[in-house]
Length: 444
Ligand code: NCD
Ligand code: ZN
Ligand code: ZN
Ligand code: ZN
Image (cartoon, rainbow, N blue to C red; front, side):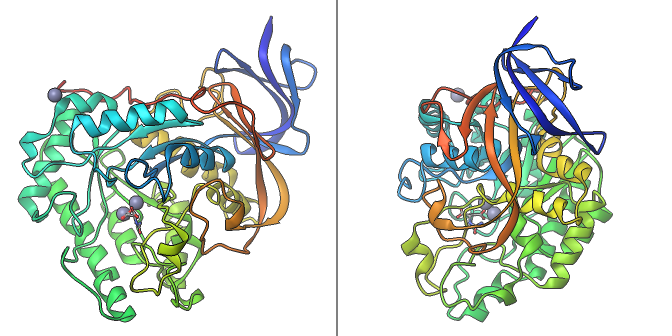
């Protein structure tokens, strides 16, 4: 028997331990993992000596922009950023321009992404003013519904208990999770000082919003699933942990909320401006502990690209959001190399956990029969430099930070996409668009 591709001499994590193994790939799937001397013949053999062969990261919180915001990012630059960062699947948020509130805008995104993709791309949709107007035809092409209580995709909506329950029920009917950006601040709330910005988007606001959504979830007797985006405060993370209900309530944290604090930045410009804002070392610590203990399920980047001009304006005028696709794997694998995270935890929070939450059967695990979505990572010290990003967004609060892990080769569906700084396939040739879930579709 001969396979298509053999990744030889690399380090593979088997039951939490490092072993030298060969990974064989055939027709886009992992054909098997072999001990030295037992590997099959292969058309192409790549030596991964001194490198780690890991499942590609799955990032379920990404703003790929495109369309009217292509100056910030488009599907080429965004999926190239993913491939260069060892991220093999991204899921795109609906707060684009135009927003995803109907089939037409979703279809435009799907077609655009399909034409230029470098990784697998899935999508979320928003919910229109009248929940009953939601076009259920979209359901099989999306992976979840997303709501922004502090900044609704259609004006004049309040996320009171009634609206939250309607949204949860719609999602439940479609077999999809409801994702929320937790923040109770009023859409019209404006800050005239930097302090004001932090007061508006306070931990209390995050906690109150998380509490409202959990209460609504617990008040329903359907199978609604709630996913809390970018938890940033110790108290809201604890509230989630306390109410954990495995498949019904899940949560994510970003690398920046795990590793950075507000005190590290002067706030002269918007380099470190994002929502939710950076918090305290106390919050960092609590989030890291709860991530290890499964109180928080996964890591997601909230890759939110803006132009350099938009980021380097004075803090109050600057846009919120930072790029994350090219820093997540380096930062999180560095946590492993420095002993603050185990390999088992890394694999759960960056690959298998995200796949589980969205029902991506066949993804997120480096094992026989799974999709061959792989990140080959070298143990190497280097410094993060925004100017070298594939993303159009070059301003990062991680600028200059030393990391110990470098994604070198990225494989999507068995095809080598990226190899040591170079893209070895053309745009639009690899990956699945849209990524679909196999556990949804109750009502369609
Ligand atoms: C995001 C964006 O720019 O789209 N910004 C951010 O600060 N995180 C929106 C969001 O995820 O809330
Ligand atoms: Zn329709
Ligand atoms: Zn958000
Ligand atoms: Zn976001």
